[in-house]
Length: 144
Image (cartoon, rainbow, N blue to C red):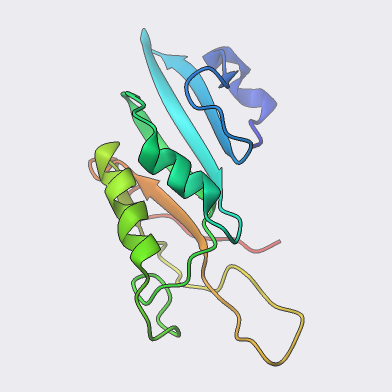
């Protein structure tokens, strides 16, 4: 997870004390006397971070965003993929427990490009936000 220097006045802190998993980063920051959290998740092919989140009773209030390389293909967020995954249901339940919803960019583009011709490119990088935020469903993805 990368936090820009311009945000240093928010006193950002990396937390391993809330959730301790190699593929989950939690950063807190202070704004107007309240603490908020940002969560970044990487899901490997065995979905270990997703299973950890499911099995861990973490009481995290004020999560503003959960982003990541979720490594789950699903027709919900990838119109080129015809199937539904049970892992996506679990991911949606975890996000819901944090009062987050899947947010869709204004430009629906692929987020992973494969090096071979046998597999299709995919959408597996996702962002979950609080639905009351003005940024919900109103952001764009800019490719490198």
